[in-house]
Image 1: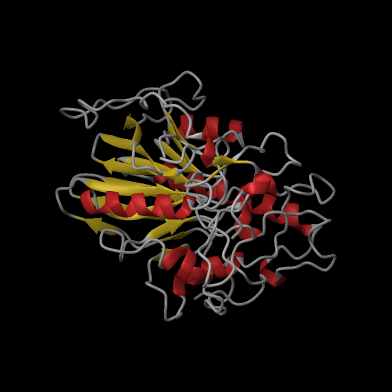
Image 2: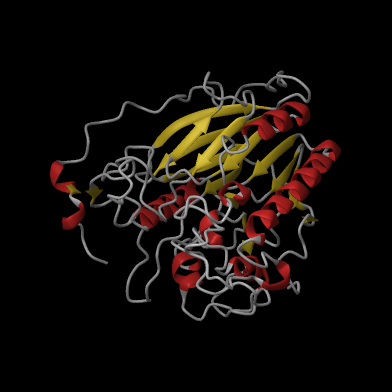
Length: 414
């Protein structure tokens, strides 16, 4: 492990090869790690339905909100038996509410898993044939830093890449705040660029106290992550700004040099955050796909008029079940509130299937390669992967039975 969590920023991982004929599947999930109290209780979604935030408040749906992470993990396992993924892309917010249960500033990997959080929320949750041994390549979200503070064990989330904890399966791969990975297939390759976008939640210390990593209210007056930074509450917004500027420079250089058929960016915040940055980057460098989380539901944006990055596709997979969803889910999972994504990769298309917490394929989109410096796309080679598949989500059925939607006061206790 590196001496500091930032030492490997910008590292290029060794190329990985999957020489088989395919099909080649990749799963995508974000905002997935529920609240872990102790081994006697299953992780439960963080409850974000606060009456203090009227826009978030909604009824509690038994069968969905109480076991969202487990439901999504179950569907991932089922899907993996028929469509085994080569690896998993993780869009961040790995542990709610406040990341790894440790303080930042310790050498990466030094903490291990004394509380069992890693085992119960990650290792044991995503196990079994089809998922076992599959690497998770990911980024950090705002809750991995602490949500409204920056001093939780985000450096340990990086350090777990090298952990010697006996319960580790060795699947976790987050070696830095930003890094790249080239994946080679028989007749094409993919360049992935993983970057940190938490600058969009690192405001001045006096701003938005309940949704600000640099909050003066929630960070201690002497808050620090040591020499790796941020070194103080006042340094916090500057530290994230410097990180973002360094990443964007690095990203431009990497995209410009890429010779892969596909260029894919993975980050936590959807591209509405930093809209003008993303419009310029996607147009100039022909980014084909941006994978994100943060918004607690499942979205795929591609050809519709509202996609301001078109023809770049955008996945928002923030419905992994670590926190209650933005909207009201159904108990049987026929909705877009919780779920994951199954991507099928080929030389000329990426098929994106959004799969709900009930196992339903909610939508199917086939993304073409974008041409640099314009809005054109490369044509598909032969028959489309989407041929004969429904493109849109099926009609939403009536809402779950009334007894499944309980008022907040009546919801089950952990």
